[in-house]
Amino acid sequence: MLSTGIFHFLFSWCSQVQRWMKTSGRFTVLLMKLIAAEHRRNMATPIKIPDIGTNVEEVTLLKWRKTTGEQVARGDILAEIVTDKSVVELESVAEGVLLSQEAREGDVLKQGTVIAYVGSPGEKVLQPAVGSKEKPARNLQERQEGTVSSGKATPQQIKISPAVRNLAERLGVDISQIQGTGQGGLITRQDVLDAKQSGIGAGAAGRGEKSLGPAQLAVVRNVTRSHREIPPAHFTVVVDMEQIITTRKARADAGTKIPFDAFIISAAARALKEFPQLRTKFGGAGVIEYSHINPSVAIAAGDDLFIATIRDAERKSVEEIGTEIFILSEKAKRHALGPAEMQDSCFLVSNLGMYPVESFDAIIYPEHSAALAVGRIAAEPVVREGVITARSVCRMTLSVDHRIVNGTTAAAFLARVKQILEIGEF
Image (cartoon, rainbow, N blue to C red; front, top):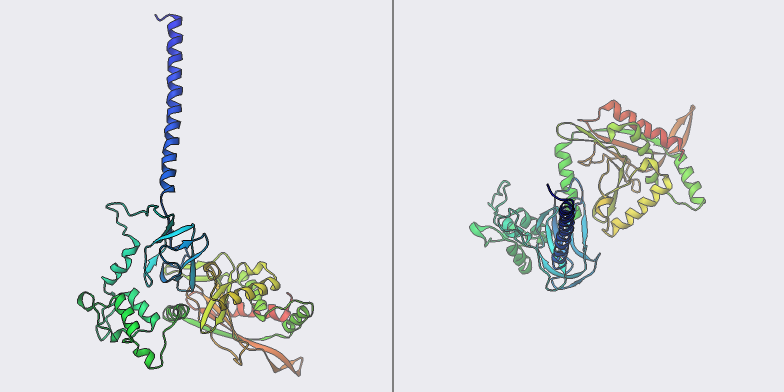
């Protein structure tokens, strides 16, 4: 048997070894963290295409605002990208020097794609691992130019990738006038740029036509999709606006100017709370209901049209909604609306009351099931209690996706909007 002294010695030795192993393990972890931190410190910061919205899968790199080697501060605008809804400015999330551009103007990119690196001169730029399925973003254009569009060929059998076709549309270049220099006569990006420079492909412009801007192209895509996918039904009602006019004047006399749109959006938001069928969209296999009440308003800015979102409108006063509309309208004029200001809406209000338009049918936005079109306010003879009198009225037309909303529901919703506006309690 071991003596007591030897037993204590062995116990003490084992305890010391155990403490050393714990300390060594912590030291190893700390050392690995320091090595990783030093590695990150010597690596440039990647600039990625951000998550712009659930309905946006791809964007187009429209224009670089910074060049390689240029000094960059955090928050500086590096580039402009185009979504289906707007032109978005891409900010730098780091400061330093723009070390490299990993994508070209005209490239179609997915969310998360690295398009640039920012860091200090000499910092390393991360490259895909050997054997990785991902390829550097700089090769995206080459891959697109090497792939003929899978769509139906034109009568002239024009070979061109979607990205290069999009570039030609923006530059106003007639691709039928271009002789492709790529494999098999494929029109490349450089062919389009050369044609623009030389004027060879300016046939369309010579006929008085002009290319559409990104925002206009987004409208074209959405209108075309709506017409192709959504079977609309339309319902019109005459609304007495006398009470709204009186309320609006009283607020203006008190120093607060409120646009008519604010009252209409507020009324629509209240009705949407009672009729959830009108804040839905068709999801292919079923109907998707929005939990939020975020109506949107159509804002014209020159030839462009923007759909701006008023979030949680049912919880806001008409003064708050009016202020938001003013801010959003000013941003739209400068083409400065951000993605968050144009997404997550569930319903559209389009007002042409500033023009001599009696009524019209609004297009249903592809992510909605309904749209409310508002015509001008005008004095008309109305019979009230057997007496003919002049009243200020306007016509509102509700367009609904007839796959989701039936006529009875649409009529009841429109009647509720009419009731809220005619009572005028805001």
